Image (cartoon, rainbow, N blue to C red; front, side, top):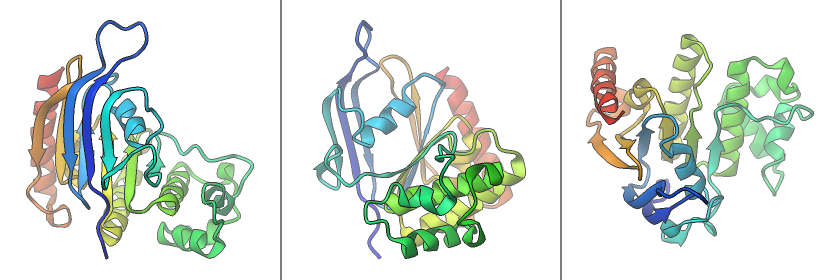
Length: 242
């Protein structure tokens, strides 16, 4: 199975109208195929904006973002998981997936629901699902759009510890199976310590890479002690960016 795409970011400048200081200037990041990169940094530094630029939704910048050699705006859209599930409340779990897949392949949508553990919930409406189940539907929807490139914007916020642990395990399993390229935005170093191969700490204005760390222990081989140590190291580095 081929891994996900390479993502090459070379932003000369990203500026909001009326703001004298650019959000980004001279930002270059190369994300390897099939890797998981975590973006850490304070709220408002530009992490979510960068995800929208990678998704090809925000094109108001100078520079290039390439997905396997194609401009992001014309590359296949990524699977996107947001801070909340953003499910359409009047549609069932299955229909929420079909709504974003032009081919409306029912068998494929059912397979994704099964792979996130919701084979028996395809007809349930969002309000009939727990918060954790809604996040699983959102993940299934993202994978149905593009399992090879996933953009995750704080996907574990507002969930209790056990749900986060369960979702971390599910993400690791599915990402490994698909060899996905993943860009994970989080304010929690533990998310990076559990899921990422590499962590970029973003800080300043214009925002730039303050620290670039490769997490050398394979994701599926990290012990609880490894995760704790990595979390502490990343937390210390993140604190230095504020």
